[in-house]
Image 1 (cartoon, rainbow, N blue to C red):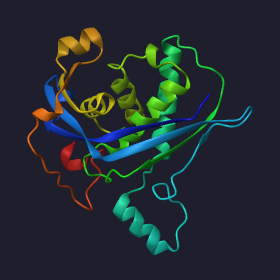
Image 2 (cartoon, rainbow, N blue to C red):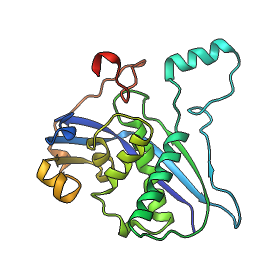
Image 3 (cartoon, one colour):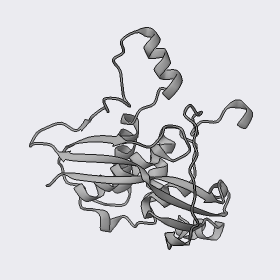
Length: 226
């Protein structure tokens, strides 16, 4: 089996956020400036399954205690390894629950990303989305897991980690481009997902993206928001 590499792009919620969590409608799009890339390399026969830490985002070696503290204050505790582990678990469980047989071969997963951290651009889900694409192709099961269901799998992986989110970001990253989403209760109850309609990205006017250098973690709620 050949190596796999997939890319997922940062997402901007244009209209409707957070109506994806309340049976509403949303309009979102991906942007080509920022992305996450995941690489899957098949293991040799008998080789282990490896989740490779990123040399910068999963840093565990520090020059001093002050450097460690500064790093945590600026970027938080969380790197990408936990995201890759979570999507592996959720993907495996989904396949087991739906009678999808997976071949017995291990692999090494690694990732890279240039999406600004904690800037509301869905950097975590981009890593998971790209990793899911690698797993779908490595196991040759893309045709067995509908595109409409894939955002649910990505969201389940994030919920596994306690990340607070809805389907909107994951839909935009799975489909790419500009996507209109209807999360009406009738759709969610009968289909298990919303109704997603890709639109022509050229319908959008010129837009500017502004983000902070030292933002808070968009996936966690403070006491004042609970």
